Structure formats: C-alpha cells, structure tokens
Length: 99
Image (cartoon, rainbow, N blue to C red; front, top):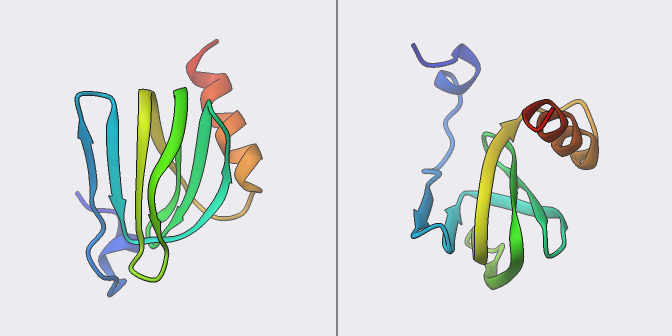
C-alpha cells in the first residue's frame, strides 16, 4: 500500500535507473546535499536518497531539470525523510545495515 505522505503530493515524476551496478540516473533531484567517492546524498521530491559505493563520481548534473547521473560501483541505496541532517540520515541507515 502506498505511503499516505507520497500519495497526496503532486510531484513530477521521480525515477531511479541503475544499469549494471555502475551507472545510476536519478530524476526529480532538488539538490546534491553531499558527495564523495564513497557516498552521495541527494534531496529528491520524495525525501533524501543516499547512494553508497566505490569510486563514485558525477557524470551529469543538471539541477535545473532535476537530473543527476553517477558512475562507479554501486553497493546500496536508501531513502530517508526530512528531520535529520543528510549525513546523520545516511550514517543511521548504513550503520544499521552493516552491523
């Protein structure tokens, strides 16, 4: 069942396309909150999206159109709601994941 918070919002389309764990395209991006070679945190219309991997780098960045493309080896991804800083969100999720 869809989350009630998401069903009531009239956001443009948001897509996450992962090809061969090496090329990631995300639409509906509002901002790049933080990034380095191991982790990206993107603010989307549906919450924060954290991407972890190895040798990550930006291939395409067009915030005017809400498009971000990332290359590198993708390990995992997860969404977070607002309320914590982007770094805390990613750390909280990933520390639970890798206990």
